[in-house]
Image (cartoon, rainbow, N blue to C red; front, side, top):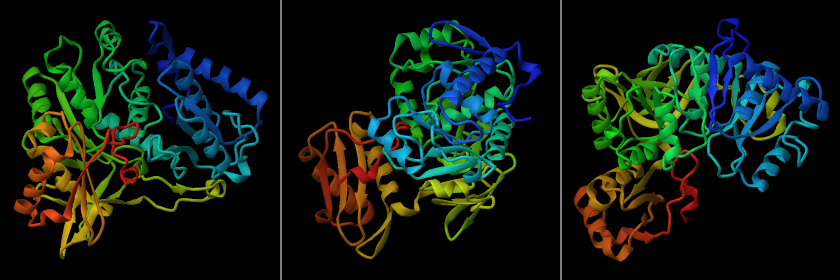
Length: 448
């Protein structure tokens, strides 16, 4: 049975607690979804067809999404806050009628792979219309592995901290729905006192976050809050600063909680590896071991993942929705790395984020991490840094939060001392804000 199907075992469980305090059982959630898509189908196209849903962390979004999965309609998820031009561009690319978010004139069953369930962007809100094609079995297998290694039960009460259209945020919903748990469903941000009131009032048992989220948790002094029901913290979506990993791992150990560092990609339906909480302190910087059902290896310094959660492939146009399984359970992650003697994996940088300069092969990600660590203002969160570069040209260090003139000499000196790169090959540039997508990752193509 798929996690989105009606399960009589859970029908009376509370599925969601919403911003306004309303509570919905699983049966009420299913019924609401069926009613929503029934009205959509009357206005749109009957039978199996592609649907674009603009969603947020609210009951109507979740109910409609699950109902379309039950009804066999592949779903493109986008944020309710997405720019209108981006939404219309997505509809045009995939054969959806402009101005209608519910599938009118969408590709029908004969134009869709029968296994196709979900289409997600890997780029957040940047407007990239290349989508990852995920099958029903992809969703379920990843869901099952997360349930297993996190040890999830119906007693869980996660509170939403990430967007529903983001693969990590969606995986939190999937895995908890699979066990009949109660989701505290909110669009409130960490900086809203109502978020923390809900976490306390409804007994949030877990919180998720990308590196940016954890920087905010730290700034808000989460480790000093009175949250007696909180027992699990999970982190993915990028490399967490070593001092934050150590801080949260130590806090979790001292307070009897669990802190999971995880690694994944949309192309693998979210999760590929995790660090068991008991190893988090002695495996700093590691992305851990493969999730249950998965396998990883290093081929030519690149991390390769194998598992039933590997996506079918990409789509860049409506015709691609009929394509079969291009990946066949194998994903070349694009992340360079290595495996230690205990089978724990580490990332050294993105394959596309290596350049050649002065005859040397250089990782821009490593440089970015080092600068963030050695510059006191960056380490304290007062300075945001991004690094770009091209082969045999200069490296650009973008800084937000200060005048570039104040840091250029120091940054150029660091390059000379650590990487033997002459200062004149390094340009320090001021920018008002480092561009990031909805999951907090830097959008490097906007740094020009």
